[in-house]
Length: 176
Image 1 (cartoon, rainbow, N blue to C red):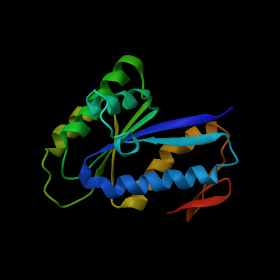
Image 2 (image 1 turned 135 degrees about the horizontal axis):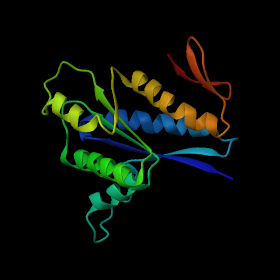
Image 3 (image 1 turned 30 degrees about the vertical axis):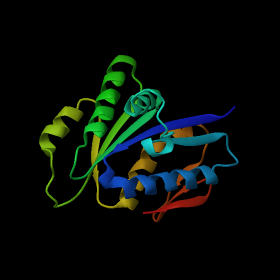
């Protein structure tokens, strides 16, 4: 029997590189777990068909938020309209159906001017989201791996933290 962990990743275009790195990281994790029945499925707008289907594309993305197990939003200097819509959909479906089961938000640490009020956004997320920050991509990947660890171990995947690495089934996946 196969098990799939669906993770929706929401962020504005300014964090495109982080989205690529997270996607590559999940591909690497899946390749390490190829001998197990566990897969991580990343849901983000880039992986969906861009062809017009007669319906607003954002509605399709919002539907994917509703079927995800874990929702992760990333913010840096912008809180884009569509990212905020996905965050609201995640909050609403969590309140009503407890799906996604877990909601996380990461703010990229920066001295850059933000186009939104950090305190206001944090306050609106806090009742539902686990809120954290990250400095750079490896830091973000470590935090995502900590989110995944109980899910993976619960499905029989051996995840360990050493002084220098995080490992899956004895394979190094992240340097701390």
